[in-house]
Image (cartoon, rainbow, N blue to C red; front, side, top):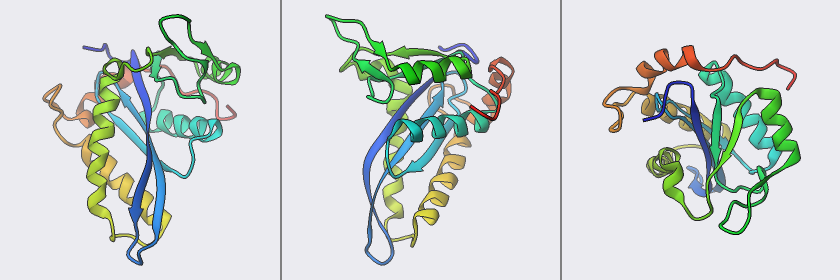
Length: 187
């Protein structure tokens, strides 16, 4: 079990095809961050997975959690690493991302390539996001789809976690005391 405030896991649910009421296809991504102890989840609809978007999503997640975990676990996404973590070589974190992590105050942890179990909490969240498919033909605009994602996020943070047998919205109250303070607004 993860200690309060210690870790979050980050990933993307990539290239999701959602269909509006008018039949327009929206190909979107959903940024995912989950705190290890409370299982509190943050989701953000995005149109791309650039480093700038990653930074924006992470900043919004820190605001949502009202703090920053001590370490964040990533897979080998190209916006984070320049060289992947494999048997033959050590990971090389992207210089700009490393500076961002120092400015915010968290340690970057990467998992070995092709080892999804290393970040099982966020992988389970990615599977949970498949529940959004029921909202096909239920929205008109990108903004309405983001509203659906926000409502979904609120709902899943208010559901009892199978792992903890408690609601994330309740456990975050304890975890919040252990999170690092929010960084200055200009980062």
